[in-house]
Length: 323
Image: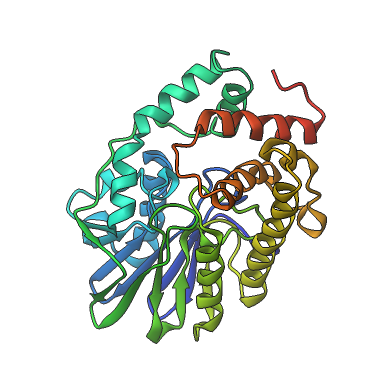
């Protein structure tokens, strides 16, 4: 992660990436696309103080303040890419239709309640883990703002004379993941289709869509690839995410066919060359999603149970007591 520092990176031609090390839970990236006095923001951050800080850095670097940003694109529904939307009350908020629906189902207030309950020791391992990983973030202070424009498939936007192409590749990481491609500037903002040097988490699937999204990025004529988490990357980084997803799919399938439970499989699968990536415990969610896919199980998932299993893996790897 050489050169991976917090802040704004000028990629040239009015394209900027905003990076937040270390890329773990909640520490997401964003981007700015400008042409003259027009600007589009790719994602906001996990809470309002972080988003306000980012907007201030962007203003200092470009002369464009929050009121000059006419459009925000949310690449998907997770709060670390949407919770700052309220700081841009004048902007059009664009997201896929599936993402807009998902945002409406899981509010920042719910996160605040879960975090408080976890900190109070009310939810066992799941609560301890949830409170620990989200300790730096202020969900209670979030005024969420829903998308004002939605789309399915593809949507072409203009920022000044720049063409910006939104490509829906979900369901994959979430229900409605979107790539933001600026062809003339050879740049793509991937949202959480890419976690670089961090473990991807597959809340939705199917895995085939995520693999296809990686392949789409590999086929793009781009010089700049801005992931949802982690440092700026290149095709090798995209291939590494593709390889991880392929590997865990094969390993999960072996154990599913052998009759092993998803929980046991999550503890049994060795991560090999991916073991050094952060947040390895996300394997628990990935295996659960793959098992559901193998079984054609579309019943509601138990998210709290998945956080408990991730917590058990997390504390086990750290040699700490879970609760």
